[in-house]
Amino acid sequence: MAPADDVEPTLIPDLAAVGAATTLLERLLAIGIALSACQDPDQLLDLILQSSRDLTCSDGGSLYLVDRSDPQQPCLRFQIFQSDSLPSSIEAPPPLPLDRHSLAGYVATTGETLNLADVYALDGQQPFQFNASFDQRFNYRTCSMLVLPMLDQTGSVIGVLQLINRKRQAGLKLTAAIASEQTQPYSPDEETLLRSLAGQAAIAIERTLLQRSIENLFEGFIRAAIKIIESRDPCTMGHSERVARLAVRLAEQVHTTDQGTLAIYQFSSAQLQELHYASLLHDFGKVGVPEAILNKAQKLHPIEQQGLHYRLQLLQQQLQLEQARRWLAPTLTEAMQRAGLEHPADCAWCQQLGSEADLETTIARLQRAGSLLQDLNQPQILATPAYRDCLAEVEAELQWLASLQVTDWDGQVRSLLTPAEQEKLLIPKGSLTEQERRAIESHVQHTFAFLQEIPWTGPLAQVPHIAHAHHERLDGSGYPLGLEQAQIPMQAQIMAVADVYDALTASDRPYKRRVPIEKALQILEWEARDRKLNDQLVQLFQQQQTFQVLGHRLQHEESSLIG
Image (cartoon, rainbow, N blue to C red; front, side):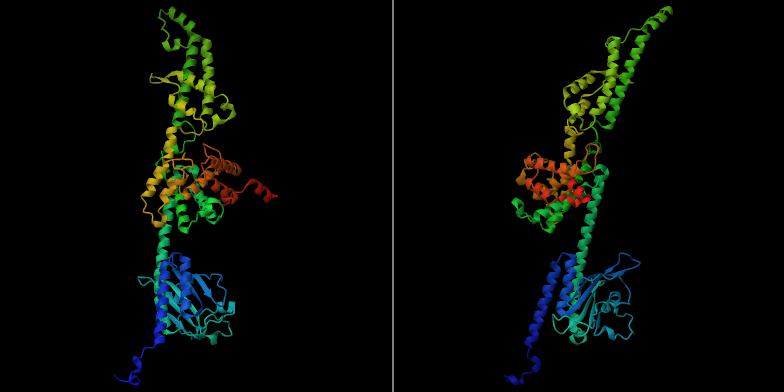
C-alpha cells in the first residue's frame, strides 16, 4: 500500500464540504416537504420567500404572481415583501406590466434568471432597468439581486421571486451606508439551488391555486343552488346566507369559550367550513316541495278561495232570485190563469227554504259569512282575542255553511263548504294542514338525499349529516328522525339556534310577521327551557350578541347610540 503522503489530494474527501452539502440537501428536502404540506395560499407564499431568503442569507425579497385574467393586459401582481432591515408592511405597489422594462417583467417575459452583482452598475444596454424609487423612499441601498422565474409543470411562468442583498453576516440590519460593504453577489451555486426551489414553489403555488379555484367553483355552485331555492320561495331571500353567517360566528364563539360543557368543543377551520356549507345548503331540499305548499300564504289555496267565493255568491244570487219569484208569484199566477196556462210546481229545494222571513234571514247570514270566511283564511286569526274566545261559535257557523247546498251551472248540487275547506279554515296556527306540514318537513330528507350524492372529501364528510339534523330537537320532538341531544351533532345544534333566530327576525312574510330582536331572544329562551334548543348555546348567543354579525342591535343600545 502506498504511504498516505502519496495519495492524490483530489481523492481525499472534503468532509466539511460533504457535511455542508448534506445539510443543505436536508434543508432543501425539508422545505419541499413543508411546501407540499402547506394548504393556505398566503402562508405558502410567505414560506417560499422566507425559505429562499434563509438559504441565501438575503436581507429582503418580494414575490409576484402573473395575472392573466385580462388577456389584453396581463400583468405581475405584487403578493408579499419581507426584509430584515425594513418594515414588511409596506404599501403594495401597483401591478407591473408584463414586458421587459422592469427586472421582474423581463424575467416573467423571457423565463430567464437575472443575477446582478450591483443593480446600480447596469450600463443601460439592457432592455430592463432598476427602479430606484423604493431605495429613495426608504433610504435603502439595493446592491445584489437574484430574480428568478417560477415555472409550472408546462414551463409557463406563473410568478417571479426577487431576492435582495445577499448579506455576509446573517441577522445584520443593513443601512444605505454599509450595504455595499456588507453584501455580496449571489453565487452560481445559489442561483442553481434557488431555481430548483423556485420550481418546487411554482408547483406548490399551482396546486394551491387549483385548489382555491376548485373551492371557488364549488362555492359558486352552492350559491347558484341557493338562488334556485330562493327563486321558488322569494320570501326567504337571503335566509341561507344569514343562517351560515350566524352559525359560523356562534361556532367560533363556542371554540373560544371556557365555560360549561361547551368548553370541550373545538372547531378547526375545516369544521367551520363544513358548518358553512351545511348551513348554506340546509334548505336545498325545498326544491322537492310543491310551490303551492311552499308559498302558501293563507289557509286556502287561491283556487280554493275562488271556488268558495264563487259558490257563496252563486247561492246568494239563487236565494235572491227565489225571493223575487215569491214576491212576483201572485201576479204571475193571475196572469197565467187569464192566459189559460198551468202554473209550474215549486221545486223541491225552494220549498225547503221556509218562509220569506227565513229566506231574508238566510241571505243576511250568508253576507256576514263572507266576512267571516275572509277572516278565517288568515294564518294567525284564531289566536287573536276576537276569535280565541268564541271558537265554538265559529265552528258552529262553519258547520251551518257546510250544511248548505248550491246548484252549479251544470245542474250539479254541491256543498257550499267542503269538509277539506272547513278543516283548513280551522287550522289553529299557520296556514298548513298536517299533510302540507309533512310535505314541508320532507325538505330535510330531500336535502340529505341530494347532499349524499356529492362526493364530499374527508374534512367535509359530515356536511349531509349536519344539514339533515338542523330541525332535530334535544327532547326528541324534532324531525325527520326524532333524535335526542346526544345523537345530534353539535354543529347541527348550533345551526338550529341560528335557523330559529333568523326565521323569527327575517323580513315580514305573508304567513307571519317579523318579531323584534328582544322578542326573538325571549323565544329562544323558551325553546331552550323546553329542551328544544341547547340552553348553553342560546345563552352564549345572547351574551356574545352573535346576531351582530347580521348588523342587528338591541333597541336599548340603539337608543344610547342616538342619545
